[in-house]
Structure formats: C-alpha cells, structure tokens
Length: 482
Image 1 (tube, one colour):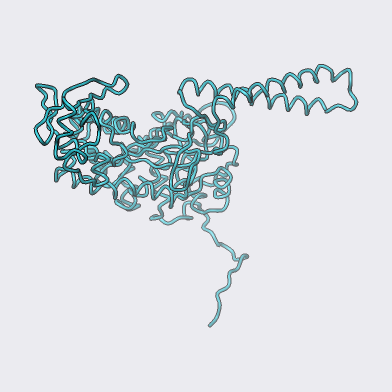
Image 2 (cartoon, rainbow, N blue to C red):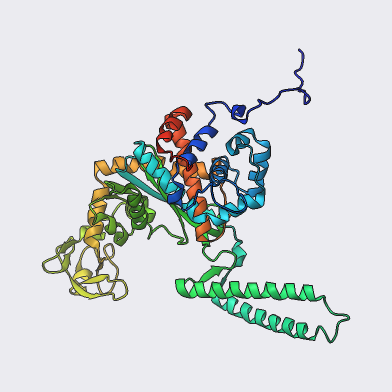
C-alpha cells in the first residue's frame, strides 16, 4: 500500500491565531482557567499592569507555565523554556511568550512563598465546588530525595575541623595577596587568588550556618548542601531526603494539605498535619485516620481531645499479633488501689515511676508468690517475680485501640490506603518526581504545593471534565484591573 509523506514546505500548516492551536476540550484550557481563578493578592504576588519601569513577564503566565509544566513532569527551567518554544499547548498557554530559562528560574526563586500557598487556594476551591467534604481525613507520608548528596552530611566534629582548615587557607591567601605587589612574577594572577578567597569565605559562612543549625535543632548531623534535609531510609536505600506529609479528603481523594518536613519519622506528625488541614477546612473534621507509623498516644490525644474520632492502629494491632494468656491486657488494673491483679488473683503493687518517661512500675508483692505459681516460667522467669509497666496515657491508649476495632472504624481504615496512597503514586510515577529541584524547606515546600495542586487538578478534570471544570472555575475569576 502507499505511504503517507510529510511536507515541511506545506503552506498554512498552523492556524493564523494562537487561540486555534488547541481544541476547546484540551486539558491545557483547564490549567489556564485554574490559574486565572487564583487570588494573586492572597498569594502575595502583586498584579499591576500600570507599574512603571522596565516591562516584565505577566506573573499569571509564569505561574501557568509552572503549574502546567509540573503536571506533565516538566520541572527544570531549561526544559520549560524549550517547551515554550516547541510545544503547541505551552505556546497557547503562554500566548506566544517565550521567557528564557533564567527568567523562569528567577520567578520560582522569588515566589517560593506564593507557590506554597497555591495548594491551599486549590483546596478551598474544591470545598466550594463540593469536591471536598472534610468529614474524614487520611494522613500519610513518603520520602522524596533532597537536592543534596548523602556524603555531604556530617557531624559537629567534622565541621569544626573543616572550619579550622578553611581559616588557615584564608590566612594563607590574605598573606599572598599582601605580597602580590612585591613579587609579581611567578605568582598566581590576582583574579585567581581573589576568586579562591571569595569561595573559601562563602564556604566558611555555610559551615558556620551548619554548626548554628545543629546547635539550634539539636540534630547530630547536618547536610552542608541543604541543612534542612536529613538522612532517611526508604525502599531505595538511605539518602538525603524530606518526609513529605499529605492529608487527603475521603470524598474524592483530593489533597487538603501537603508539607515536607525534616523529621525522619511520622510519629510526631499526626496532630500537626490534621490541625493544618482543619485550618484549610475552617472547621474540624469528624474523623482522622493514619497507619501505625503515627501511633503515638500523646500525639493522637491532641486530636482526640478536640472531639475528632481517631482511627489509628497500634503497632500490635497493625501486625495482628495475638496476645498470650499472660500479656499485660490480662492483668486487671484497679484505679482505686492503684495496683494490678494478675490472672491468678495476686496483687502487683506500685513501686515507682521512671522520671524520664513517666512510666509507672508495678511489682508482685512477694517473689515467692510467682515462684510457687504453676505458671512460673511461662508468665515470667524473673527472680523478683512479675512486673507490669503502665504508660502515662494507658487509659487513652486502651480506649483508642478499642475505638479502632469498631466496625465503623474498620470501614474508614479500609478506605485509607486507596485514598492516601493514590496521590503519592501519581506524584512519583506520573509526575516523575524522584527528587526535589530546590533546596531548603521553603523551596521544597513550594514544590510540594505545586505537586499537590497538579494532582488535585488531574482529579478535578477526571471528575468534572475539562469543560465542566472550566465553567465552574469561571465563578472564581477576579476581574482584571483597568
């Protein structure tokens, strides 16, 4: 059969108007409508077409470039520059504007705070569009690599030694600079020496900043390239990373809040993340759920005290460990006498409290009671007899464990994985995010906000369709300034 051949010299390949480059149902139009619906004053970006001075690129166009680019895994400034020259959807989105990579990069650098607020506005739009119910929230975390090498993470001793070496080299350079006029021949050029001196002084400032951060945060090790990241363990190994926390709504699995933190564990994140999500909702949710990685009783109590149902399994419940006949749960606590009674009816009296963690210790009254017991060796092998430790929040822990076992809680927890894991899968696989581009918590959280927004927009398009979403977003548009 015959072949079809292209003709690069064909006249009238493209429409005369850029508006006709993309179809009415093209997803790029939804991204355009979303950015147009944002309140730029609330973001902290001033829109003033009448400002004096040299003209600059429209902030709305620049934000569209980033939101749309991140939505398709195009994140670097050079790649975004290339797309604005060659990709029809980008050309349509930018209205023919073609900023260079330096301009694109500078916009992101200058507007980290504004980018961080985009996800919050997106979530509140979803609330008004009835796409987020705010009744049941799910929390989870994932590790994403920082823009820093693992080998650049050092302890205090290393930095103090490195600082003394830098000081010695700076002194040598200063001495050579002072002698440069006396011995001009056979010496390095003044420019080379001055550049090296500047580099050493900058390195000294970074090392001093790392030591300062180490002192303020009481961390054992700090990364010189990105002091805010930490060594974290994941399936891919140990790397300098951030722990990205996400709070997802139950109705359509949309992200309410996302944040990159430096803490390697999820254990202290539950209350903080739920509180910030409730701030976006402007009301408390009805129930909050997470996996056993968040099972810290003190942390869970902060949310439980607010009347929010907490659905988080303990480590024992998550591992489905069967309790033996002589586990602590079979020992009855007597609050009036402040003692425990063993399954055989013998008393374990209070003997003291651990000052470091507040744990209360209870011991059998006489060791001979245990020695004579038929269960000695199975219940305990201790010479002093059986001991039981009571946690400071033991009653809260037992109540939350019982609450997790309820049928309604099991229904909520069964939906958790499908809801909260979906965004991370999309961000890591579809958006090709295996590491951050920016450094420092402000930059990383700006990227996290963009990634969360990209996921929400993809879900909104799936739920409402391109035309339906554009129609609903038109209600949020702020009239242009004259």
